[in-house]
Image (cartoon, rainbow, N blue to C red):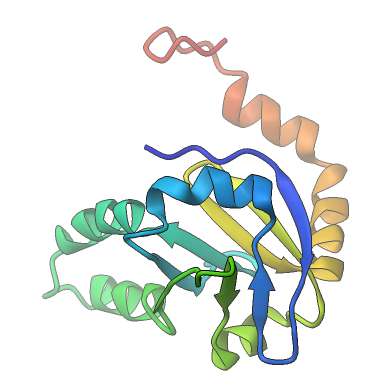
Length: 156
């Protein structure tokens, strides 16, 4: 599994192209040849960039859903809405399609934020607002998610 580290700022040009910062491009190097999948996030107004290997793992899980259940079909349709295969070009740029620019509200200032095995792509102002909004209850969330005594996974 890929595990990305860091939060990086960059700019989008008028065509929706981002220059991937060199430090991040180095982290992405193993996935550059296979390409990426770019999609709308489920819970936030941002985009998620999956290396193809991570996307394939996600699709394995989704393919196990029973398509004869309406809820599953509805989920699959919404989860894959607007999904695009994208590549980082030879100059290190990533082109974000217009419909995904609209969904995320990306203007010029962009934040690329690691989210374990994927990257989130945010409009800078929306990212800062999301971080500020979550700050007040992060301690409670951290305790609930990570503070349980669970001998199976070594977390305590």
